[in-house]
Every structure is written in structure tokens, then in C-alpha cells.
Length: 275
Image (cartoon, rainbow, N blue to C red; front, side, top):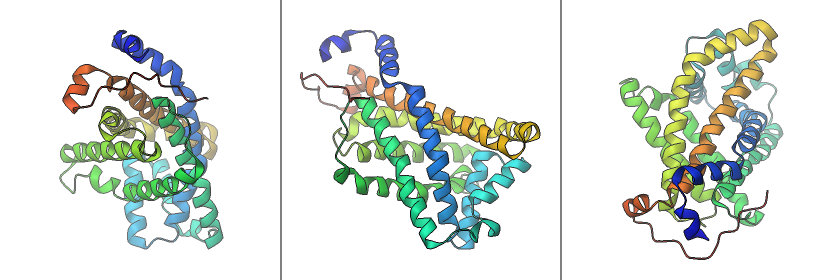
């Protein structure tokens, strides 16, 4: 069955993979979890960070939101732990935010498993992986501003640095959340597509996002920024989901397998995870 599937044209297999994975559904779920779980966690963690770390977080968020927008400045003040937001957070609130944020990593796990047609792993196997992924992702977020500026050199160095960091992050993310059921090398095409695509989208979004935020706030008030950010997140995770899904297809191509020195898969059919 796998041999017959690989005999189909690449474009046909890519379209079938995207349809089977249900990209828009996964991207919408990831965006919702990121907004409802991950962003509150950022606020909670920032509220207990030293001033220097909060400054770096603000710098990183401004690299995503765009630096020329008043609305973007207001948003990064909220999400980087401004004094008025700090007083509402206690130790219990932070713990609840961290536990809730595992819903985001669980959604990412489902994305990876669906793209690779694997059944869900046991909770005991994945529980510590969800927490570890959140810790690494949050740590990496603090350094996005430095990478975006290319350590002072500028975008000429910043874009390649961000792209390399994103590829490594999505490569490791797949391997971690799939519980090592897929070897490292087949995961690389998806990591490259997702990482480079996400960074390129963030660079382009920094051009239109400030304008979109300003218009949405003018039309709908503060609630308008919520709609705009959710749209930004849905597009972001659509690119990530497409990258990982197509990476699985590219990993079956003989030229790619030869280049990455990937052994031929077994003849046993792969059962796609239930949805």
C-alpha cells in the first residue's frame, strides 16, 4: 500500500495529505489554544521575571507585532508584564496558567501525530514532554528580539538566524511530541518548511499587522485587537501545519531520502490516527 501511494505524483499526494490532516481545523485549534492558554502563561511568567527579562520579552514581541504601531506597543506592554498587570498575578495564578498552557502543547502533539498518521501516545509518556516543550518554547521566545536584530547587525543576519533557530525548534518539537516514534532525519523536511515559512510570515506580518491593529481598534475598540491577533495566529499555524504535513510527504521522495540517508520504510501499512 505504501509503495502504491508513493507511486502517485507528488502534487496528488500533497493534496491528499493536506485534506486528510484537515489543516484549517488544526490551525484554528492551535490558534485558539495559543491565545487562551499560551499568551496568559507569558503574562504570568513575565510578572515574576526581572526587569531585564521583561525588556527582552517586550523586544521579542515587538519584532512580531511590528515596532511602528501604538496598538502594538500597547499589546506588548500587556504581554510583557507591565506593572498594572503584575498585581493581579499570584503564585497560584501562575501555576494555573502553566498547567492550562499544556493544552497548547497537547494541540501541537495532535498536529504532529495526525501529520504522521500515528495514534496518540499515553499521557504518562507525554506529560513531562508537554511541560518541557513549554519551558523551551518560552525560553526561546525571550531571545527572538536578539535574533531578529541579528545581534545588532540587522535583518541581513537576523533572518537567517531566526530561520535556523525556527527549523531547529520545529525539528525538535516533532521528535519530542511524537515520543521518538519517528527518527530524526525524516522529520527534517517538515521542520525546514515550517521553520522558514513561519519566520518569513512573521517578517511580512510585521508590515501589515500594525496597520490592521490600528484599523480594527478604530472600528471595534479594544476587542478589535483580539480579532486581529486571532487572525494572525490562525495564519501562522496554518503555515506551520502545512509545513509539517508536506514534510511528511517530501520525506517519502527518493531524492530526499537519498540526500538525508533515510532507510526505506517497512512494507507494513501505516494506520492514520483517529480524529
